[in-house]
Length: 575
Image 1 (spheres, helix red, strand yellow):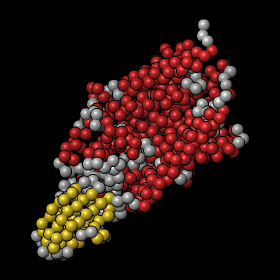
Image 2 (cartoon, one colour):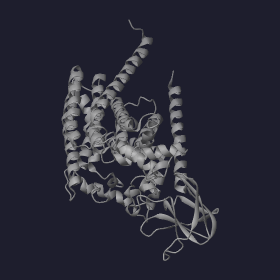
Image 3 (spheres, one colour):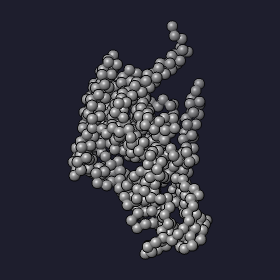
Image 4 (cartoon, one colour):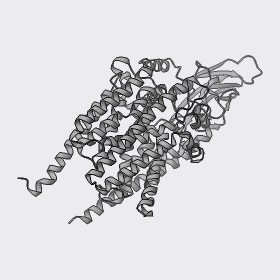
């Protein structure tokens, strides 16, 4: 016999066991995802070098006492680039943090396991609201090993996008609660808005293209809710959540948007990287591009077909069970989030890619699989009869992982030497290659030498053949501060192993000066007078970064106010 007072305790215990099971299932599935790593080494996809280099650079700067890096010291073979101004911080901070507790070669695999485990748990959080726990566990496993996640793991190595995709199911759930399509279990609209804003900001701070996809997807959900429920307040609540989320990311987004004028950002849309080159099964005059686009397109077709079949099964199952109205609303929203990404992956949608703000910077239309994977996992969970969820669900997960992996693993590049090679290059003061779109204006980083001294004395005029004798003493040389002395009896020029960028404040004997730069590159060059000159170059906080930080602080205060208001409302509603 159970007494009424014991019912809440019993429900909490059951819910707790469900979350533990979700964690276990998601972790087990994630380990299955990286199983080939144990005998083949790390999958070295397209972006592996970029992320590994960022982790190494950040870890080195943390050891120098720089808590939030902005300048990638070792990019462009030591000349640097403002990579961390433009690339969202969560992935490079997590990768660097893992290196302090793990061997470097273990970091990629553990990163993947952490991200995909979180993905499964977030999918469980969405599904458990509408289907039995056993079915929600199937959804967790299916999302943790969805085809697009496997494409990222084996072929792309885009750790930042992987981290953002892990949060997508939770973002969908938060949007449904905020616009009132499902019950808000946080007990108040202010808390629902705060929760949505935090998850939305986390997506943006993980990966910018995923942030763009999330922004358009959530705007679509809010517009759908306003139209179908005939309530414009739902749209305004959604707009408020989006605005607060953007406010939380102000310290990153505002400088990244403002300082684009200081770099060659258009290189992000160079040949082969434009949406028009990457619609499903598009071929261009680049064999390597065509091979990968065919693989990505095949995975997209698999995901689309499986989502469609599972969606029909889920709809039939809910029709037979006479579901709650919330379940019907969820099915319609997820159908919308299946149809829109599918349409935007094919060429007839090119008009949207051309005119919708910033959508073209997503670059690859097949990236919409990041959104499509959410309804895919839920529909699979909802379409399986509860009594057969364990058997059929387990079989489905094995088939998806095994089938997709057998298709991708042979095509992947397996290499465990990337990180050791990068570490050695940094230890030898050589650094690594830079990124086209983060190259400062006026520089062509392909013209920069791979091996250059930190300081080079040049003749006072280019017409002179020989540089005068000068004594150089380096006082301090870190990622964000360079200090040195030059003593010469004649006027000289000094070339720093540093790219000219507006955030660098250069002073000679305490007076600010404007650096020059080489004609064929953006290497910083200073003109010095005879005698002993003390030069400092510091990466300073520019006004855009100060304003962005102020916006984020205001957003955090607003967030705390919303949580507090929600708590007060709950207390006032208590008997």
